[in-house]
Image (cartoon, rainbow, N blue to C red):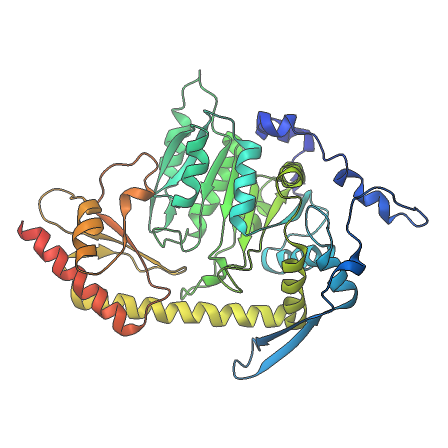
Length: 433
């Protein structure tokens, strides 16, 4: 039977700042207010009778019939919760919805030593997790290329970023094993590995089942936590069934508790609503919540209430139907973009077809040596009226690369065609110079 890691085993994974952070003297006592008969003089909550909102009505497309709209309303107790300060980890009703989602999607049940915490987008809880686990100067394992949005977190801590090689199948486990086997005995081993296993930003890769299993085995062997950043999990559109998450796969390990998972609703409901959530070992979630309690108190109760109102009205079957519609939408976008690449950049670039997400990662074939996309993309391509990202911004240690990241999520078919034509002319000009 799979066992959870003992709570005390997480002490070594916590940063000095997390160990020194004290619980909020007020928020830590909030649960005591729920005891029947207690008259609370505790919190400086504003009196709800002074709030002008009486109800919030929402109109949304039906997840099963986009031509039909459904209406929901946030009022009564739900609105009262949404307008007032709430629990640091999230509104209980919304947290319970997430618990059941994680059981349905990942097979994880409550009572296995893990819990959830709602964040203002997954970036919020990722940042707080990094602050809770990483000390200045620590060595950190990151897949390479890596999501550029996490680099400033580690760079501000002056971390030693250890690049783990990837390909179109995900993290190369032989690269990870080699790094760990040859780790200097005088230097502390990394405590965390950061990865985006579905539709990776920037490479578009989706990690295969065997790669995930190998990385999980290494996490147990070398005692590190996998930071599973999975904002594109519901944007999977490959032909094969979706691979299990790290969060799911660790159930087959002798012990659970080495995966800290981050989900986002930004890509499937609204990026502006800023709702994401972390799921993982309770001691790590506690450290994240203690950060939240002193940084921003909590994620907006109102946005949580609005989000829960919609999801509750849809039900889990409606949510699943909606995510399937979204993934089909991005598959069509991918196919349009790849069609343009084949027409205009065949022989001028190389790429792998993404199975999730919204990015193509392609290598410019500039002739001679490997080449460098930096000046070509930042200057020459932009002068021709097309903007993309040179691959160097996704390399933890910088350096030259011929790769380019292109996002295909927003463009109409005629815009894609024109953009790739302009890139073709830019590449041809660079090859002649």
